[in-house]
Length: 80
Image (tube, rainbow, N blue to C red; front, top):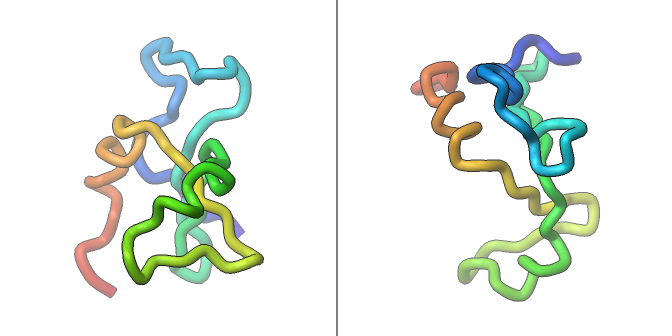
């Protein structure tokens, strides 16, 4: 199911995660899609989405730290 982590280990260089357990992460799936582990902010974000954006009943809005996404940038493909 999971092929690889994008970016570096969130705990690299002694980094601490907010709850000191688990970690925000971006993972590539074997079908080419991506999975994101982050803090569930669906409840507070639903009423503040950009025009035209929506979150379906089977979806969640998650927050990941900026450093996680920026750290994964080099691993994100430019095209299909």
